[in-house]
Length: 60
Image (cartoon, rainbow, N blue to C red; front, side, top):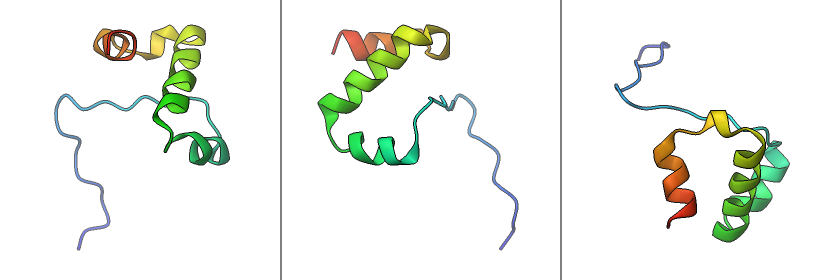
């Protein structure tokens, strides 16, 4: 088995948000709490988020 990572599938993206592993573990399983956190991060760093994510967050 190869030790190298496979290339990303075209069109996939990753958004890295400021969140400690402890904080993430506390909120990830609670849909509402996680959404509140993402909305907060969006308000601070809107440039991190593509338009379609914004639409999903606010127009769900």
